[in-house]
Length: 159
Image 1 (tube, one colour):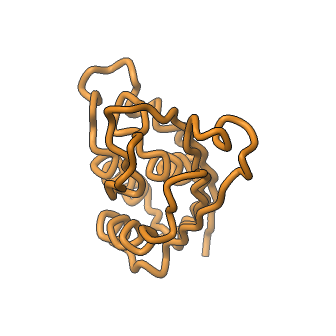
Image 2: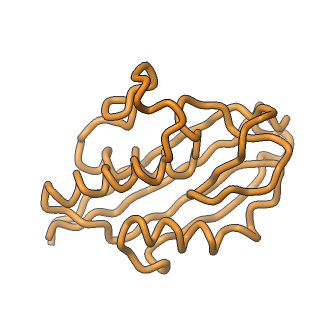
C-alpha cells in the first residue's frame, strides 16, 4: 500500500463584525476571523495538508485571494473540491489529525460538531478525523487573542 503524509498550517487575524467559523461550524464569539474567504483556519490547514501530501501546492494556488470569485467563499465547498482532486489522482484519506490554537473561545465543546461536519464533506467516518485544541499560554499574537491558528496532518492512501 502506498502512503503519503502532508502537513498544513494556517493563521488568521481576529476582528469584529465577522463570524468565527472553524471546521465549518459557526462558533459564538464576539470576534471572527479576517480573510478573503470565510477564513476557516482549520479547514484551510486540512486542505494544505491534503495537497501537500501529493505535492500539489497549496490552497492559494487553487483559490487565490486575489480572485474575486473566492470572496466570502465557504471553505467546506473548497474542501470538497480539494477532496475531489485528491480522489481523481487515485488517493483517499486514511486519517486527518489537527490542532486549533486559540486562547478564546473554548473550542472543546465544538469539536464533535466539527468532526461530524468535516466527515460529511470528506465522506469519512468521524473517527478518521482528530481535532484537538490548545492555547498559546498568552504568548505571541495568538496568545494575545489577535488571531487563531491551526495545524493539520493528512495521511493519504493510494486506492
